[in-house]
Each structure stands twice: as C-alpha cells, then as structure tokens.
Amino acid sequence: MATNPPWLDTGDNAWQMTAATLVGLQSVPGLMILYAGIVKSKWAINSAFMAFYAFASVLICWVIWAYKIGFGKHMLPFAGIPGPALSMEYQLTQAILPTSGITANFPMSTMVYFQFVFAAITLVIIAGALLGRTNFKAWIIFVPLWLTFSYCVTAYSIWGGGFLAVLGVIDYSGGYVIHLSSGTAGFVAAWWIGPRLDADREDNRPNNIGSVLVGAGILWIGWNGFNGGDPYAASADAGVAVLNTNICTAMSMLCWTLCDVLYYGKPSVIGAVNGMICGLVAITPAAGVIAGWSAIALGLGSGTVPWASMNIFGKKVAFMRSVDDVLGVFHTHFVAGIVGGCATGIFATISGCAAFGITNPGGAIEGNGVQVGYQIAGACFVVGWNIVWTSLILMFIKYVLRIPLRMSEEDLLVGDYACHGEEAYVFGENSSAYAEGALRGKKIEGIAMGEDKGGIIMGKNPDPELEGSSNGSHGIQREEAREIKHD
Image (cartoon, rainbow, N blue to C red; front, side, top):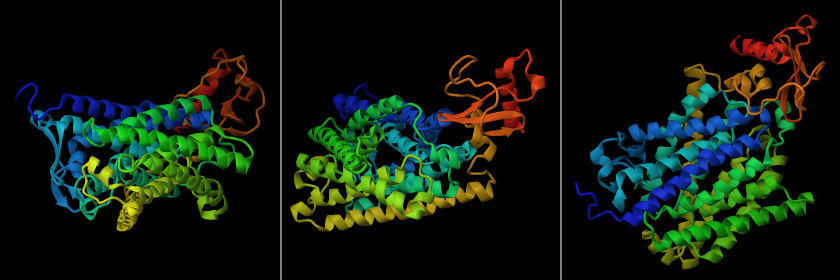
C-alpha cells in the first residue's frame, strides 16, 4: 500500500485526529478534574477514578467488538455486526460507514479512534449522576454492558445508517446519541443504586471550585473538536459548527447566571458551569446546520429551560428529589438534549444540511415542520431504549451476579480510603485538618470518626491505652481503617 494513497487528505486526517484528541481531553483529564473538585473531599479519588476507568474500559471493548456494532455492516435496523477493528489491513483502509455509505478521506484507524472518544465520554457523563456511593465493582461490570447494549444501538440507529437515520433524524454530533442517552441512563441508574448518605446530600459543597473551573474550561474548548470533527473533514461546515458551539455556550452561561441573580440574588460559579454545559449539550445536535442567530436563540433556551428544570421542578417535585442525581445530569444532559434536538427540527437550514452532507430540506423555518416530529420520534426511542436497558443491566448485576450496586454504610462513611486505600488530601499532625481528642460523629470499631465540613476526618483513637503507641495516632488510625475495610 502506498505511503499516501490517493484517497488520503492529510489535512482532513490531521484535523480529525486533532478533534478526537480534543474530545479525549474532555474526559481525561477534563471531567476527571471537574468531578474530583465538585464533590466532597472524601470522594475526590473515587469520582475521578470512575471516569478514568470508563475511558480505558470503553477503548478495549470498542476495538474488540463494539465499534462495528455501532458503525459496521447491517445486522438489524438498530445494530451492526459485532467484530474486531484491530487488523492492520482494516486500519489502513479508507474510512467508510458501510450501512450508510459515508466515506471520509482518512483511514479507518482515525475513524475508530474518533468514534471511541464519543463513546467514552458518554459513560463518563453517566458517572456524574452516580458519584459518592456506587460500588466500584458494579461500575466495572456496568461500563462494557451499557456500551454494548445501549450506546452502540443508538449510535448505529442515528449515525451508522440505522432506522432513525433513514427516517431523517438530525443529530449533528451527539445531542441524542451521547447526551440524551447519558442523561436518561444516569437518572435511571441513580434511582436503582439509591442515594448517598443523608449527611453527604445535606452538605455537598465542592472541595475545590478552582479545579471545577479548570475542568469546565477543558470541556468548553474541547467541544471545538466535539462538534467541529463531525463533518469528517476540515470543511467550511466544521468552522460553522465551532463558531455556533461557542456562541450558544456563551449565551447559555450568561442566561443561567442571570436566572441565578434574579432568583437567588447572587451569581453562582457552579451555576455558570451548569449553564455552560447546557449550552454545549443543546448546540450539539444542531451545530453545523443552523445559523448564528439561531445559535443565540438556542443558547437562550438552554440557559433557561434546564435552569427551571433543575432549580424549580427538580426541587419541588417529590420524585425528583428522591432520586440522587449528584451532578444534575438529568437537567444538564436530558433536558438540554431535548431542547437542542427539538430546536434542530425548527432552526435547521437547507444550506446547513447540504454543507453537512445530508439531504434533509431544513427544519420548520424552511417550511419543513415535519422535521420537528422526526426529532421528537428519535428522542422517544433513545429515552425508551435507555430506560429499559439501563434497568436490565443493573438488575443483572444486582440479582444475577449478586454484586451490590451501592457501597456499604461503613464504606460510605469513610469514602475514598475505604474504596481504594487512598485519599486525595493527606494531612499530618499539627496541620489544621488533623484533630486530636474527642470528635463529634460516630465511633466505629475503635475509631473516632468526625464529620468536618469537607468530609470525614479521623482523630486519635479514643482508647487511652493506645495514646502512647510509638506508631503515633496517625499510624493507628490507618491500620484500624484497613481492618474495617477488609472485615
């Protein structure tokens, strides 16, 4: 095979790999940093590790069987034939989606990796709803199963040439495949797993808002690759998608902040991050097919509708309060995904669709009002499929494999150290976080556990016989914590 075959466009290939790298950075380290900072300090490691594990696990599953379910040859109207994407001959050939007939001027290896980073971030987003109590062993099993039976199905149905693509559903870069599915699955999984400890829900202040902002910044700029890479070319439409992404996101963040000021009397940094995320999610299905003015309008919708969903509906409806969706994934991904999907059916332009390479005659503003109906039909399938399969997978893990979905109460009190034997922030004696003497809280098997504003802290063992131990109180606590863990 020639070093540069005639079908290879080096500019397209370079941009596609760059876009894929930007999307990968959104997960690792973007959402890892955001998750580690937005939870209580005792959950920082576990939260970041859930994202870290999902990224690695998805990649191995992706190249062995999952990619071809989502983008391979036709098997069912909603799934391709599973198989590996690992041979040198396969990876060096021109990229093609065989069911839809779409080709690109870069190799299959680039296509496989580009689609992988989208699959990975979907599972990472789901993790955001489940932080602070999910049994890591259950998460290990959940990731490959949900990837196979849920993500790959929606990806094939909409992007791989499946029945929703034939129907005419427009999802430019994952408003449905990624965000609506993760928002649905995260909320359903949160219901099945159950809530965090009451104390963790009542005092859930972030341990490091600075790192939250760092993660949010990586997420925002990384979205240039998220939406800019989906034309599969360094094309004019890729530029439109990048610009519209940033316009909608900025507008959404400003609107959310204004809502916070009007309703609560002050702007919130975490609120601004939520508004940013909602803007990114809402523009995703529409990025390269709508005009800039429509991106502003969509940002107005994504900065207000999910805000009302989270701050009014979510707090006043008893069922919504009972489901412990830690980061509000339902509001920022499910609701924002619905807003963006329906807006696509309204604002899609004929010229935008043509630039993207699809035959849809625009949306309602172009006189094609039926497109809104197609978008709603697509959303209903994605939501229904994810409710069913997320539930089936979690029931399989819980009732067939007999793996608890939620950590034990003892482990929930301790947090990271009970789960992984590690802590995000370690302080020694004489530091402000090190406590001696009696602590408020519970005594568990000889350890005085006190709950500080930032999480669980450990003090000296209250047994006076151990006060003079040469190991020091810090060593005593650690040894006994390990005994609790292994018992």
